[in-house]
Image (cartoon, rainbow, N blue to C red; front, side):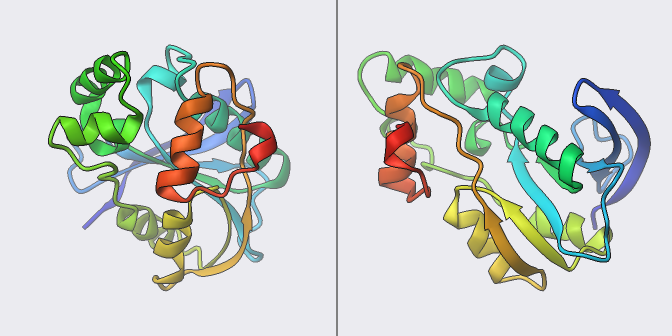
Length: 198
Protein backbone atom coordinates (compact mmCIF):
# COMPACT_ATOMS: atom_id res chain seq x y z
CA UNK A 1 0.00 0.00 0.00
CA UNK A 2 1.41 3.36 -0.99
CA UNK A 3 1.87 5.80 1.87
CA UNK A 4 3.55 9.07 2.82
CA UNK A 5 7.25 8.57 3.54
CA UNK A 6 8.45 12.17 3.95
CA UNK A 7 7.32 15.74 3.34
CA UNK A 8 8.69 19.27 3.48
CA UNK A 9 8.14 22.76 2.13
CA UNK A 10 10.29 23.49 -0.92
CA UNK A 11 10.73 27.03 -2.30
CA UNK A 12 10.95 27.10 -6.11
CA UNK A 13 11.05 29.77 -8.82
CA UNK A 14 7.29 29.23 -9.15
CA UNK A 15 6.59 29.60 -5.42
CA UNK A 16 6.75 27.44 -2.31
CA UNK A 17 5.14 24.00 -2.42
CA UNK A 18 4.57 21.21 0.07
CA UNK A 19 6.35 18.21 -1.45
CA UNK A 20 5.31 14.77 -0.24
CA UNK A 21 7.08 11.51 -1.17
CA UNK A 22 4.88 8.44 -1.63
CA UNK A 23 5.98 4.82 -1.88
CA UNK A 24 5.39 1.41 -0.36
CA UNK A 25 8.94 1.34 1.04
CA UNK A 26 10.71 4.14 2.92
CA UNK A 27 13.99 3.14 1.25
CA UNK A 28 12.62 3.70 -2.26
CA UNK A 29 15.01 6.11 -3.98
CA UNK A 30 12.46 7.01 -6.67
CA UNK A 31 9.15 7.69 -4.91
CA UNK A 32 6.15 9.30 -6.53
CA UNK A 33 5.57 12.88 -5.39
CA UNK A 34 2.67 15.16 -4.58
CA UNK A 35 3.51 18.84 -5.07
CA UNK A 36 0.92 20.96 -3.28
CA UNK A 37 0.49 24.72 -3.59
CA UNK A 38 0.30 26.66 -0.32
CA UNK A 39 -3.06 28.26 -1.15
CA UNK A 40 -4.90 25.03 -2.03
CA UNK A 41 -8.51 24.94 -0.78
CA UNK A 42 -9.38 21.27 -0.23
CA UNK A 43 -13.04 22.13 0.45
CA UNK A 44 -13.51 22.96 -3.27
CA UNK A 45 -12.65 21.03 -6.44
CA UNK A 46 -8.83 20.79 -6.42
CA UNK A 47 -6.77 21.55 -9.52
CA UNK A 48 -4.74 18.40 -10.23
CA UNK A 49 -2.09 17.50 -12.78
CA UNK A 50 -0.91 13.89 -13.28
CA UNK A 51 2.63 14.37 -14.63
CA UNK A 52 4.95 11.54 -15.64
CA UNK A 53 8.69 11.99 -15.20
CA UNK A 54 10.68 13.11 -18.26
CA UNK A 55 14.37 13.61 -17.51
CA UNK A 56 15.16 14.67 -21.09
CA UNK A 57 12.47 17.36 -21.17
CA UNK A 58 12.51 18.55 -17.56
CA UNK A 59 16.21 18.42 -16.71
CA UNK A 60 17.91 18.80 -20.09
CA UNK A 61 15.19 20.91 -21.79
CA UNK A 62 14.85 18.64 -24.83
CA UNK A 63 12.92 20.17 -27.71
CA UNK A 64 11.58 16.76 -28.77
CA UNK A 65 8.69 16.99 -26.29
CA UNK A 66 6.81 19.59 -24.26
CA UNK A 67 7.06 17.78 -20.91
CA UNK A 68 9.36 20.27 -19.19
CA UNK A 69 7.25 23.20 -20.35
CA UNK A 70 4.07 21.43 -19.23
CA UNK A 71 5.54 20.87 -15.76
CA UNK A 72 6.56 24.53 -15.52
CA UNK A 73 3.13 25.66 -16.72
CA UNK A 74 1.39 23.34 -14.23
CA UNK A 75 3.54 24.60 -11.33
CA UNK A 76 2.79 28.20 -12.29
CA UNK A 77 -0.94 27.44 -12.61
CA UNK A 78 -1.31 25.68 -9.27
CA UNK A 79 0.82 28.28 -7.50
CA UNK A 80 -1.60 30.94 -8.74
CA UNK A 81 -4.83 28.94 -8.39
CA UNK A 82 -4.07 26.28 -5.79
CA UNK A 83 -3.77 22.59 -6.55
CA UNK A 84 -1.63 19.47 -6.65
CA UNK A 85 0.81 17.99 -9.15
CA UNK A 86 1.04 14.22 -8.80
CA UNK A 87 4.53 13.52 -10.15
CA UNK A 88 4.82 9.91 -11.30
CA UNK A 89 8.10 8.05 -11.87
CA UNK A 90 7.14 6.71 -15.30
CA UNK A 91 10.03 7.84 -17.50
CA UNK A 92 9.47 7.57 -21.24
CA UNK A 93 5.83 6.47 -21.00
CA UNK A 94 7.13 3.97 -18.46
CA UNK A 95 9.75 2.29 -20.66
CA UNK A 96 12.72 3.87 -18.83
CA UNK A 97 15.48 6.19 -19.98
CA UNK A 98 17.60 3.51 -21.69
CA UNK A 99 14.74 2.34 -23.89
CA UNK A 100 13.69 5.94 -24.41
CA UNK A 101 17.11 6.79 -25.86
CA UNK A 102 16.93 3.67 -28.04
CA UNK A 103 13.55 4.91 -29.28
CA UNK A 104 15.02 8.35 -29.95
CA UNK A 105 17.71 6.68 -32.06
CA UNK A 106 15.03 4.97 -34.15
CA UNK A 107 13.21 8.30 -34.48
CA UNK A 108 16.38 9.69 -36.05
CA UNK A 109 15.91 7.03 -38.75
CA UNK A 110 12.37 8.20 -39.51
CA UNK A 111 10.12 6.31 -37.09
CA UNK A 112 7.60 8.32 -35.10
CA UNK A 113 7.41 8.02 -31.30
CA UNK A 114 4.86 5.18 -31.38
CA UNK A 115 6.52 3.24 -34.20
CA UNK A 116 9.89 3.43 -32.40
CA UNK A 117 8.48 1.91 -29.20
CA UNK A 118 6.76 -0.86 -31.15
CA UNK A 119 9.97 -1.59 -33.11
CA UNK A 120 11.66 -2.19 -29.75
CA UNK A 121 8.92 -4.64 -28.77
CA UNK A 122 7.57 -2.19 -26.20
CA UNK A 123 4.06 -0.81 -25.71
CA UNK A 124 3.25 2.55 -27.30
CA UNK A 125 2.36 3.79 -23.79
CA UNK A 126 2.83 1.67 -20.67
CA UNK A 127 1.89 4.28 -18.08
CA UNK A 128 -0.56 3.47 -15.31
CA UNK A 129 -2.36 6.23 -13.43
CA UNK A 130 -3.92 4.07 -10.71
CA UNK A 131 -1.15 5.16 -8.34
CA UNK A 132 -2.18 8.78 -8.94
CA UNK A 133 -5.71 7.89 -7.84
CA UNK A 134 -4.22 6.16 -4.75
CA UNK A 135 -2.29 9.33 -3.89
CA UNK A 136 -5.42 11.48 -4.22
CA UNK A 137 -7.21 9.07 -1.88
CA UNK A 138 -4.40 9.29 0.70
CA UNK A 139 -4.67 13.09 0.48
CA UNK A 140 -8.48 12.74 0.84
CA UNK A 141 -9.11 14.65 -2.40
CA UNK A 142 -12.50 13.67 -3.83
CA UNK A 143 -13.34 16.36 -6.41
CA UNK A 144 -10.89 17.67 -9.02
CA UNK A 145 -10.28 19.83 -12.05
CA UNK A 146 -7.82 17.81 -14.14
CA UNK A 147 -5.07 19.68 -16.02
CA UNK A 148 -4.58 17.50 -19.09
CA UNK A 149 -4.95 17.04 -22.83
CA UNK A 150 -4.88 13.25 -22.45
CA UNK A 151 -8.25 11.42 -22.59
CA UNK A 152 -6.66 8.35 -20.96
CA UNK A 153 -6.03 10.35 -17.77
CA UNK A 154 -9.65 11.56 -17.86
CA UNK A 155 -10.77 7.92 -18.15
CA UNK A 156 -8.74 6.87 -15.09
CA UNK A 157 -10.47 9.56 -13.03
CA UNK A 158 -14.00 8.93 -14.30
CA UNK A 159 -13.62 5.20 -13.58
CA UNK A 160 -12.40 5.88 -10.02
CA UNK A 161 -14.01 7.15 -6.83
CA UNK A 162 -12.74 10.67 -7.64
CA UNK A 163 -15.26 13.11 -9.11
CA UNK A 164 -14.09 14.95 -12.24
CA UNK A 165 -15.46 18.48 -12.02
CA UNK A 166 -13.76 19.73 -15.21
CA UNK A 167 -10.83 19.29 -17.58
CA UNK A 168 -8.37 22.18 -17.89
CA UNK A 169 -6.30 22.14 -21.14
CA UNK A 170 -2.54 22.42 -20.74
CA UNK A 171 -1.29 22.94 -24.28
CA UNK A 172 2.20 24.08 -25.16
CA UNK A 173 2.77 25.52 -28.67
CA UNK A 174 4.78 23.23 -30.94
CA UNK A 175 8.30 24.01 -32.08
CA UNK A 176 9.81 22.78 -35.36
CA UNK A 177 11.20 19.66 -33.64
CA UNK A 178 8.20 18.75 -31.46
CA UNK A 179 5.52 19.31 -34.11
CA UNK A 180 5.59 15.71 -35.39
CA UNK A 181 5.60 14.33 -31.84
CA UNK A 182 2.53 16.37 -30.92
CA UNK A 183 0.78 15.32 -34.14
CA UNK A 184 1.34 11.66 -33.17
CA UNK A 185 -0.04 12.40 -29.70
CA UNK A 186 -3.18 13.77 -31.30
CA UNK A 187 -3.59 11.23 -34.12
CA UNK A 188 -2.58 8.03 -32.28
CA UNK A 189 -3.44 8.72 -28.64
CA UNK A 190 -6.35 11.09 -29.22
CA UNK A 191 -4.87 13.95 -27.20
CA UNK A 192 -7.15 16.97 -27.16
CA UNK A 193 -4.87 19.41 -28.98
CA UNK A 194 -5.68 22.51 -31.00
CA UNK A 195 -4.51 22.24 -34.62
CA UNK A 196 -3.50 25.90 -34.59
CA UNK A 197 -0.61 25.13 -32.26
CA UNK A 198 0.63 21.95 -33.94
